[in-house]
Length: 392
Image (cartoon, rainbow, N blue to C red):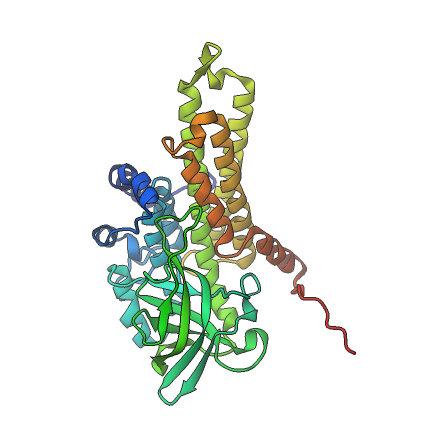
């Protein structure tokens, strides 16, 4: 029995997701990775028809009315085999669409959420800039009110779904006030005149998940696309905690898949006339891997369980994300070592897990940034990371 025991309905959901992952995506995942194939539209429809794209969204907007944990269960099972498929569920349940659920107008909710749960649209989040990554409040992209429109100028960097998603929730400056005070959020459709995209990034991992820069040159969107007004940066990042939970679940899946594959391998692979698992060193490594995975799962489940259908506690999220991200890298690396030379080949899929593990440790706030957030929560205050300006 686990401390956070799944309900019968959640266990049934897990089994369904595992079956889909095993039968539909596992046979194609390696080739999609090699070809950098984005999830085909018919597969997006499959996930929508299964109800996976609206698991944690309200029923009144086309969702299933479930909890964050429900979505995490499906994300984990899919991500064990195919991260691009899991990402579709990740984006629709833990991505920027949740900002609309909490802070969007009624018109925005009815316009975008049902279309997201049906797979008709996808929405990426645009936060980072060339000179504003971890220091997100240094962003310069600005939206200026002009009558019934906002005119946007600037650029965004490392945007997951860039050039592929149909819509973007843009974090930008709405006033000239410094820091977080001038930042809000606005919806920008992909076809907006004045919005263009850079070349698709060739990343170490994430090969079936597109990423590209966004460029805004007097891009105009209706004023009704404003979701969060200036000064609402804290609101935006409060909901971003949900996305970090999805991110952490990707790392958990990688760790669990690495452990599962390592277990199977060391029971069948023989050296010196006996299976690898008979060697004490192998037993120690496997035990360490299991402890890391289980600890990450407990941290994640605690945050999700305590949240229910509400926003998770930032402290619990940062603990879970930091630990899970580092666990995914560490456990996939140990799995590669246990596989020896075979682990370094594409055939066994371990190197693909390890490449993706590093990506999820960067996306959504690095472990270093999570440690800063953890310390801030522990001491109940913000720590200024910028050097003090010396007056002359």
